[in-house]
Amino acid sequence: MGHIVALDAEGHLIYEGLLSSQEKATIDEILNALQTEIPQIESDLESVYGKSVWYKYNLGLFLGELLEKYDISIAERRRFWDEIKTFATKEDRKRDEGTNSVHRSFYQQCFILSQQDKEVVEKLTWRQWQDLLDRVSNREDKRIFEWIRNKSEKIREDDWREFEKGLHLYLKSKDTSVFSDQELFEIYNSIYAMGVYWRIAFAQFSKDFPKSAKIKTKARRSKKYQETCFKLKKELKRPLDDGIFEKSFELAMV
Image (cartoon, rainbow, N blue to C red; front, side, top):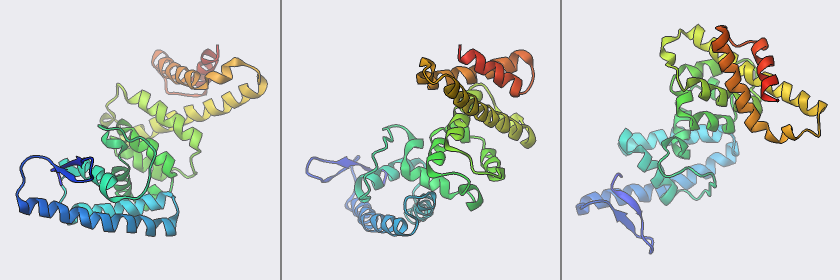
């Protein structure tokens, strides 16, 4: 599969390098199979699960079978996902995956999702999973999935976005492998709490000052709030807590 690079203007396959007739025939055979199988499985799954996270999970299971069936190596997988998108699927997914971004590939994200236990998958919506799968650094430590499993309640979309941003900011200079499970989960919990505090405090500010121009700069102030939280945490040499959240919010809204 690694030899296919594109379609030409007339819709013919363009191969990379010099291939034997047998190699081309093998590639053509795989593509013909994909063009039959992918649209059918996508249609079947949508009829059962709609566009829910379970559609993506079960599609990922099917994709895993294809990787084994066609002996697709790890190095060839991104090309394989791209070839499914280009040659096989009938779905028009408008979300930009980028040209060099492995983690933004829809099919790879479905495959990664399918490697998780169902008890983990059900805790997040597909949009929330995309946020996590987009940020490779946030999921590099696999214990994030166990933390998700242990959450007793559904996580709000807005709280999850703040958590993802906060975790990404925190991980810029951290090696989480040095933390025990308990230490790491406490870090996750504190960053999650930081986002929840922001949501509640900003909602109250918006209610108290509905005409304030600061409401329109929410994203910028959220970033400042998180940066200030981590700065105070370091200066005060203590874990993130409500005192730090309160002071950071005040400074972010100045």
